[in-house]
Image (tube, rainbow, N blue to C red; front, side, top):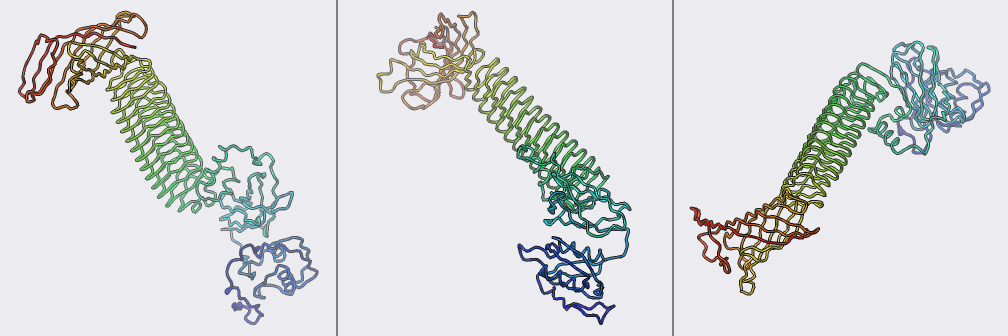
Length: 615
């Protein structure tokens, strides 16, 4: 049983058993104060009136009769009104109400006047339909105190140090912004009508981009989203301190406040920062950031960022970034990035990136990479790049490239490169104006030189050659690259040995140049090295090296004849005695025959080669 008020120990007390009931209403039930009733009171005593109200509302009042003038008579008519509205009209703010289980507890209201704070409560309704509106923002633009109406349209807001002539702003998406002026002596429950603004009504024609932008601004964390959607006004404050979002000096309107300085113990949420923001764990800003932003874990910015960002894990930006970014893991910019960016794992830019970018694993840009991009594994651009891409494994540019691509494995340019591609394995570009240096080089066309083990230029120099020399009467070679530098892959055989049990053949590799003398006549300078093999095994070094100097005559398209002299250098191992006889039909004049200290023997002679080429 509840205590009897000490000033009235002999008064009658209605039993108060609320403490033994749960403090919440059964799911689906309307809260006591929001139950709708219709009642007529005609000169009823106050205690009789309360009994009628509780009977219609299906609940029980619990109160100390000492706080209520039970003998007072009341006359009033209430149609489709909430219990809260009825009680407010009966008591004029002198009584406070609190629901506990199915009991409505009445206590004496705080009638002491105070200039330190003021509590305002009421309902917000649709002007046309009378429907109570939920998620309406009610706030004081001076103190930044705010509240959001519940599902029954009710709000209660406590304003610290209110002005003498208090003005509340009432905002809701798709409704006209409303101002309510409250005189100092204005008490009681407010009923605020709002009018639909047809120009603001959201339609199905809202673009996907608008929906994404709204999601970023209102749901990037779990803020008071109604305030962010309803209030378009921006407030400016020199500084703010917060513990977590919406718990700090900017209160629940922090998402609408731009600060010069922002300090967040755990994390903060604001509309903008103009000079400095520090966050123990994170900083979230709806609009622009200027100056320095430092977050222990991450920074998230919905607008433009200019200055410097530092984050232990990630910097996340929706709009343009100008300045510098440093992140332990990730810098992700949904627009363009202009400046310096360094990340332990990845720099990601949705549009163009310009400046210097370093990443432990990848620089990925869904636009152009302009500047210096260095990554441990991958530089990726869906458009153009330059003047430098350097990575441990792959550089990729779907568009054009200017400058140098340097990669441990692969360089790829979808269109044209003006500069150089240098890789440990493969270079590819559609058009090359410059050089390709790699184990394999592939291009559609090139104005320059590809240097590598194998180079293939679709609109370049490639031939199949059938030739004979003084030792191997049948040789087939594939020459590929450009006239300034091409690769040669060769095989050869001695016809005289084909009927023997162990045939003699050769395979080898070389490079060469073929400068044009006239449209139909070209010079040739080739260097090749071939391993001579007897049978199917290679038992020792048996290399035939050739320097070929000759001419190529092309009387018709796609056909050419070649002839020239060769300087031959035959290298063998003196410790091996089973070499086959090379000079079975013709013995050349040996111009040098010398043994070296490492048991290698060198024999040299002049020879010749003739052949036909298919272009």
